[in-house]
Image (cartoon, rainbow, N blue to C red):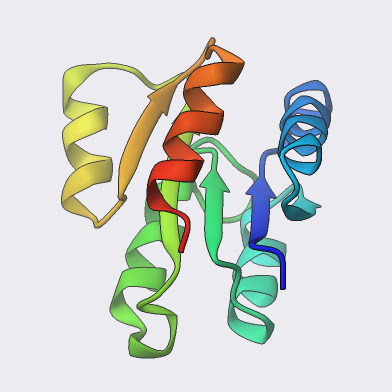
Amino acid sequence: MPIRVLIVDDEPSIAMSLEFIMEKEGYDVEVVGDGAEALNRIEEDPPDVLLLDVMLPSHDGFEICKRVRENDHLSGVKVLMITAKGREEDIEKGLSLGADDYITKPFAIKDVVAKVKGVAP
């Protein structure tokens, strides 16, 4: 069974790029564009890897990461934050909330692929 990746990003060009990259690598990919929809999808059918933007409508990525980490049912979900919020305090916040890694935009495709491979089961 292929590894499932949920991409949560409200910027269509970034979401489409990530979707293309992940599908090319053989992952089963789903894309959602806002925080509320992301929480619903994660709880209904947890992905193996979550590529999570921070700045989202309805719930930001920090809140989503926090909720995922507080739910024992979701303990196996790997969270990679991908965001333009690259200040040191943002990175520290994401990691302290339980993100497995933090990637800043703009990103290199090979770096995203390597990081997903590094956390994927």
